[in-house]
Image (cartoon, rainbow, N blue to C red):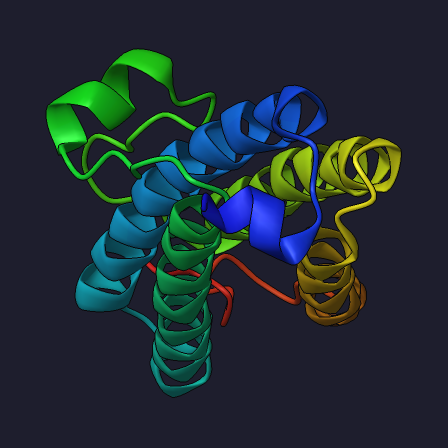
Length: 170
């Protein structure tokens, strides 16, 4: 007996969910690597704040990568594990060099916009396939990401008093 048969999901309906999860996995892997870059290379007056935030975000991303890959397996497919393949399909692109200050905050917000959009679409696909587990997984991701967006936007509203901005990370 196949796994999908036992858990009561229709393979033809779940195929779109598996494809969307594979895309999300590729984007999360690049997102994770970019967060490591930001974490390793942050500088400036807000070093401690942003260094910790990047670490929090990449730890969360690492957990999501594992959960997404395991969900793909539970749905009867095999998750991609090669970065060379992720780079071919990811909509999040790897960053070249170090970004800092407002640029890094804007980059994080763009990443969240991308991931949130994919996760909302996955909730719809999962709903059509009666895949409540995938929908629930995505809903959990959204709760955390929406909070992070709110916090990053609040952080970005800092007023600059002179050229030695405390937000600068370059």
